Image (cartoon, rainbow, N blue to C red; front, side, top):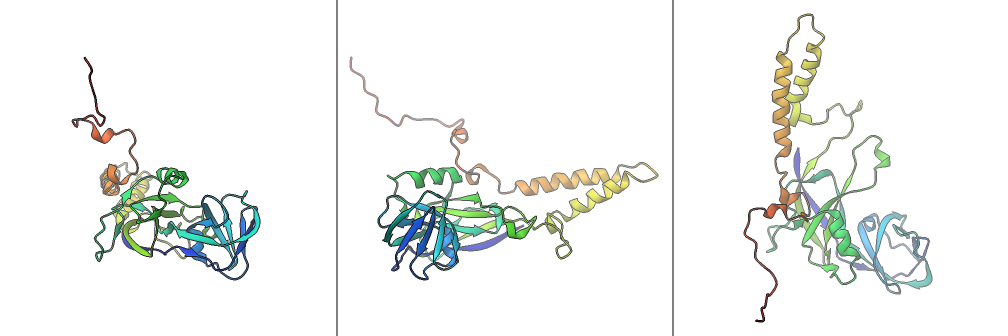
Length: 259
């Protein structure tokens, strides 16, 4: 099932309070941090490079993915929002700006491609987001057997507050006493029922394949439904140029000849 969502990315924030770091934990001198900082990259005034925030700890600490970050000299920090929680399992259409802007849709790439850009010191990290990826987040330990969560990642990181929109495919939580809707929900309801009837049919006194044949028909329909929207332009970076097969190729360098 698909549903449209809005993703808010805040403008960069430079703290007025100072901080120090020890083994990847950054501590501020007063309350500065809120939970949205877990979706940021941080730049410290007295340090080179950018650091990805892993999580927040109360209102005075952020935890970095890099546990080696340590500095005792107090400094300020600037946070850039580059991620947002994705409640679905991936995008079925391009992520796009609102109708009140003249910006086109963002280009979808894989998370490794964005990671390489973030690690390239020559890249322009901050600006108008032009691309995005859907990347898996850490396993949600507070949800038991719930599905893997995902992040929407953007690049460049937003230089001002923006809202992006996109249709996400929802993934139901695991079944429980309070949640008795099976995986697939109403989208694949007939396939689920046909599967149950086909299994029950195998235990009947009179052999029959009526429901098995029906199940195969419904399974085929469900597979085709799931494939809807799964085309190369949204599945990430295509490095082998296989989508250009059969097209006329031209040189992109100048060729000279000296007799």
